[in-house]
Image (tube, rainbow, N blue to C red; front, side, top):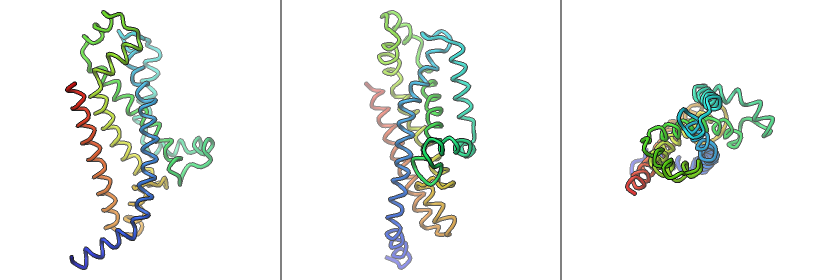
Amino acid sequence: MSDALQTYFQRVIDYAPSMIESMGETGIMMIFSTLAAILLGLPLGTFIFLTSKNRPLENKFWNQLMNIIVNIVRSFPFLLLVIVMQPLIRATYGRATGDPIAASFPMMVISIALYARFVEQSLLDLPKEITETAQAFGATTPQYVFKFLFVEARSSLIIGFTTAFVSFISYSTIMGAIGGGGIGDFAIRYGYHRYETDIMFTAIIIIIIFVQVFQWAGLKLAQKLDKK
């Protein structure tokens, strides 16, 4: 092994504790974002679908209101969203920066809006026969949602979540730029401020590998469910 490689691996070992800590901080942000997307984004997207025209809960007011809110959040530049939310985060949590939990607040907001739109689109792509079949069986709205919509759209919902999850990772690196912690913050501190590009690229490679593995797993799961 060359001296350059030995030096590189030794530096990686030296920085490993800080890198692992940063990965843990990113993990915290991703957990909160994932929970927000599933627990709130999924119902919100479903509600927008159900309140659209010719749907069981058709309601023009609520449909337009939810659509406007989702569109505003999705079109809002994320960095500006973080800045706008800082007073609210500070009032509710006590601090707005320097903590992965504080950084999770704006990420949860964007994750809800982002996945809600994916959910709505997945349900809109379903053939009309699904609705007609549910009506023929006299299904209630909950039965229509859980036994027809979600069952038929499960592969699309998983692919949509996989795509959204990758975006969550990108947002987490932006949080690092303003002191939110995480692997993005690690890359910026060591690669940008200290000009230690080898350590920065190591962090970037870790992010890329994680994204690729998650995308592969999500696609495989979607394909498996699609065959059932």
